[in-house]
Image 1 (tube, helix red, strand yellow):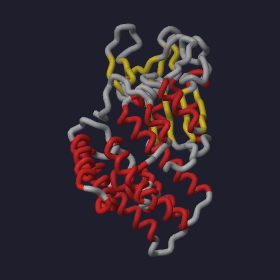
Image 2 (cartoon, rainbow, N blue to C red):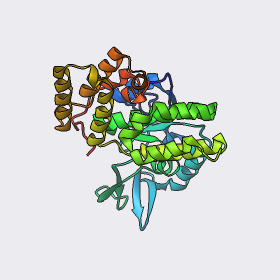
Image 3 (cartoon, one colour):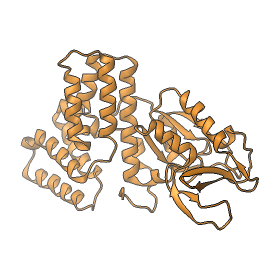
Image 4 (cartoon, rainbow, N blue to C red):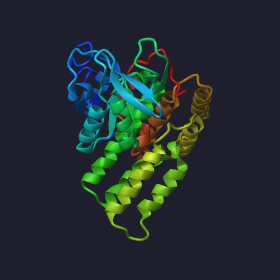
Length: 323
C-alpha cells in the first residue's frame, strides 16, 4: 500500500520533454514515460543552458593529466568552466528533490559508462567515467536515487531505484510537517523494507526514533535521513528478501493448510534458485495478509513500496540482475 506521494525528480530534458539533443531530436524512452505521471518533473539540459545551440556539434570528455575537461572538438572550445559554473548555479539553487533520471552515456548527463577520451582526435582511445553534470549531481546528491534511463530498463535496477525514490519522497513529506510521532509512524511502516535492505541501519534508525535523550525533531530527521540513505544505498540481497518473507509468513502460517504452506515454501525455493521474481512469493503472502486481516503487515510499505502500475515496465535484454 504505497502512500499517495509524488517524488520530485530531475530529468534530462531530452528524455521526451524537448528536442534538445545535439542532433535536434528527443528520446521517448518507455521507462521514463511510465514514471513521469507518478512524479513531479524538473527538467534540465546542461548543454543548452551553457549556450550550445540545437542542433550543435557533439561534445566529449577528455582526460588531461589527472583532470577531465569538456571539449567541443569541431569548434575547439573548452567549455569546462561554463559547465562547472552552471552546475554550481543550478544544483545550488535546486529545491528539495528525491532523485534524478539522466541521459545514458551523455558526456554531460551520463552517471556512468560515459566515454572519457585521451585526446580530442577522432580515433582517440577512451576509458569510462561520468558526465560533467552527472559528476556534480553525484557529488552533491549522491544519497538520492540517481540513475540513467538505460540502466532503468533492467528490472532489478528499476525496482531498487523506485523503492529508494518513493521512500525518500515519503520521508520528505514527514520533513515538511515534522513531528516525532510522524517519524515514529514512518519507521514502523518501513520496518520490513529496512529489514530487507540493511538490518544494521534499521537498528540504528530505531535508536534514533526512540529518542531517549529527547532531542529536537530536526536533529532526529537529519540523522535519520543519513541512515536511511545508507540503508538504501544498495539493493537487498536475495537471502535478506527470503528472511523477510519468512518473517511475514510466521504471522499467517497457523491459518494455512499444509498444502498452502508447501506451495509458499516451494515458491521461495523457486525465487532462491532465480527461477521466478520476488513478486511471485510476495504476491502469495500478500493475499494471505489481506485474507486474514493482519493489520501490522497490511500497513508495511514493503509489500507495495511504489505504485503497482510501475511494476510492469518491460525489461531490456540486459536481464534482471544488478550485476
